[in-house]
Amino acid sequence: MRGPGARRLAAVVMVAWLLAGIGAEAPEAMAAGGAPPPPRPTPVTTPETAALLARLLALADSARSEDQRELAGLLTQAETLDRLDEPKERDRSRTADLRLAAVVSRLRSNAAPAAATTLATLARSTVYRESWQREELLVRALGTPRPLGPETLSFLDEQARADSVNLHLAVAALCDNGSPEAIALLGRKLADPSLDTVYKLGWFRDPLLRNRRNPEMLRAAARWLARDGLSHDLQIGVADALFDYRPDEWYPGRGGAPRPPDEASTTPDAASALRLVGQTVLDGDYPASIKKAVRRTMGKLSSR
Image 1 (cartoon, rainbow, N blue to C red):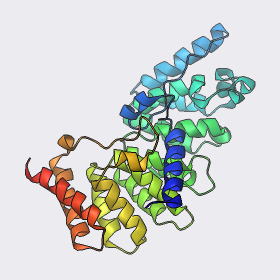
Image 2 (tube, rainbow, N blue to C red):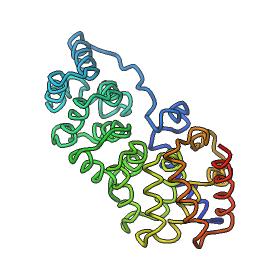
Image 3 (cartoon, rainbow, N blue to C red):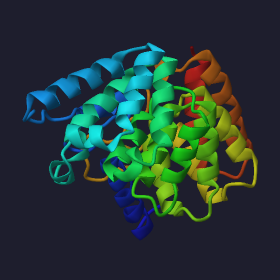
Image 4 (cartoon, helix red, strand yellow):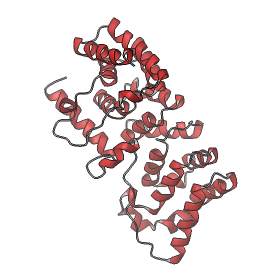
């Protein structure tokens, strides 16, 4: 794609990249798979607020079910949320600078099943979700490899709709989560005609690119390229992002562009799925430049 269309696509990729919290303010977040920049310290104005934050952080770190139940109860109470981040202060703060951001970041890093249950509780809480900033934090927290249950999957489905302010963040979270449930929902979003095709092409060159050697992503890509659910332009975009990388063309005039994973890190499971996708491209109606990239990638796999 060249000309005005290419410029629009580059602009969309830039917007999505910045919204995902991996822009010029925090290039270090790229290594974190799209995580937002670390929260800036927020002055703790009272001993009571400091004690509350310390308690919530300790609960968020815990793997114990009883601690996570207590945390979920606290984070679904308006009184607790307003004590933690006073509404007037919250409304003029960056989302990443809220005290709550530190708590949700700990939850994001907690791999215990009980922590996933807390995230599910927040996803269905009308009190927690009254704030768009809190919804943003929850979207980001779900962009960590872990199974998604009905509540969190429904939440991300809603957040990844055409009229959602968190559309780009939610799609990035699905790619970064990488679970079968997340990738299946991603496939439905790519086939959704209400979502802008240029947005989808932008996602291919950012969150999909960063996760292009995830075996689950590759198995899904094989299905996307073999069925009629995606337009051929989108199928070409998927194949391009899976096998090629042209940063000067895709991200003109930008530093800190999204990068694909090192091919040396490709697992045997991923390599097997990648070969299937590559053969589909070689056998199909794809540009010669993409087929060349496929052969180059397949050659690297053969030499391992």
